[in-house]
Length: 239
Image (cartoon, rainbow, N blue to C red; front, side):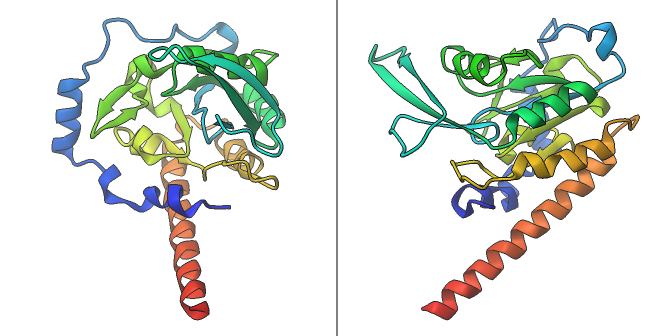
């Protein structure tokens, strides 16, 4: 379920930009002369573009060896030149989720991680290459000390793009396009991706999924608020 330390960010007004803040963001993050991804292939022309975050959305990666993990790889850190082991836990139901998603959506990954890290993970978790495009940290916008998954950089109609991400900063420039998901930190019984399929199945044929996405986000944050309130009441009763 929710991770209180991480997911409470979804309730912070810091990640709800005013019109003035959006103008400031765009001034410092202009649109590229060429979109960061190519036009859709003919078989994807009528599909909604589904953008997926990587860390804490599809996987959880750590330098500390956990009791159980799905795979590991060596990573040479660019600045220090140190070689570290990265241990990766794959979010439950990921393969089923990708099987469904690629059938009905054009799927891409958009991460604030570096390619030397992200590519090793994506190659492992997506052997069938359901994810058509990959964007990394240097493709992100930057505002308020956060990396932004700027959907206007993709050169597609915003009304046809959805972004699944565990942190609201990622989509604070295009908030209505964001689909929140609680953070995956290795919970063995996690069902975040499994639960998300029912919503995506509902919007897959919509001309624009944005109205339903906006409502989904509102209801999701209301559930988070209720969860946190119940948690605080429970902690107070114990103390």
